[in-house]
Image (cartoon, rainbow, N blue to C red):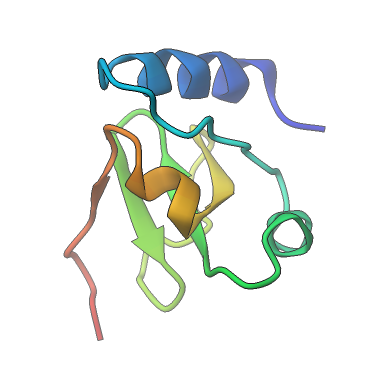
Length: 87
């Protein structure tokens, strides 16, 4: 199950763009997100910081204020890509 806090933050975050952004579907586990979007990459979305991390970055999958989401969904939102730890 997805945490209630994460879901509320995802809905609020999606509404901040002002446009018709694609709704975010947050998942607790990476495998769940990958099944939801089989042809897309999965990223870790940190709701508190407003950034997302790609697989291989240091903070990918870490923290309590985040969820796994599909990259195409998060690109249409107000969240930005983290440049920390890119390899």
